[in-house]
Image 1: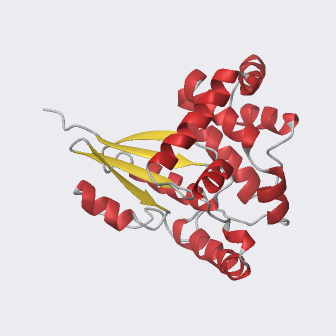
Image 2: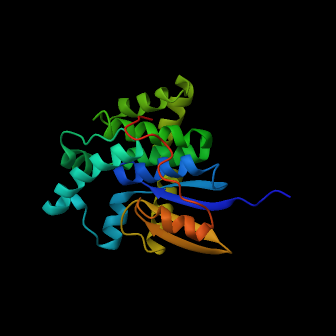
Image 3: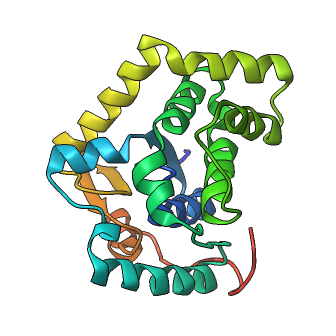
Length: 225
């Protein structure tokens, strides 16, 4: 008899480098832990406003620590994290609304593309310091993951649909209702009960809850994706 998959939801925004870490780790463990991994794109700015939290970059000591922390995460997890030249411009002025609407649209129209689409956004912001807000940038992201020109134009057009806007708001509110105050949020469902974890450094606790073994980053250190 087949063993039931363990349901884990990942609530994330591509603006968050820590979300990228959680995303890659859960993708790596998806088969090993027999996960039904469900991607839940949300809007980080909405989470921060709704919870009354402040972005780490607005607190000088946190900003300085975050810069060092990203280097450590890059080396340990083998994820090519490189902060953008102007993090404040990327995170506070440009934001990620269009990008997260696009990922939300993909969950409906191209669910098999949500993983590469999300990863490509992270690569643009947190590795290559490229834009994710301009219409041309959204087109490039779609084309880079293998969508045809027709599929690309169709998907990008969906970010203006009220249905997609409402879905992103709904997912963001769902995370807030579970106590979210930042990103990422990992929700594991065990015996019909949700267990919420914040951040990308709770995998030992998650493994313990699921009754599985945490074996580290699963890739050689200093490797790239």
